Length: 114
Image 1: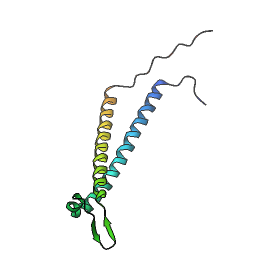
Image 2: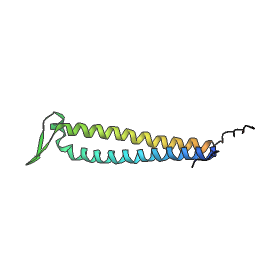
Image 3: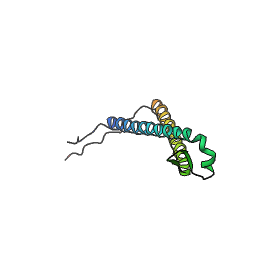
């Protein structure tokens, strides 16, 4: 059941909390993707010259590494690292901005008399 006159201060605080939670979840997810793609790049490091030249590599019998794996790992690492840095920067900026300006309540509407 919806309230007729919700508190504007409570709405602003809820919006801030949702934005903070979204940015934090985005930063955590980007960090996980950056970590996993970075570990993949470390595993591909010994084969990087051949993969960079576009040649498939066979590290052990029955296993073949396609050169596209190097490109996908590089793209995922770059994108997720950039997203992680942007999310952390936005979280710090929001924390600083919200600390300097207190939440101001919107003026209450006057009820019309009938």
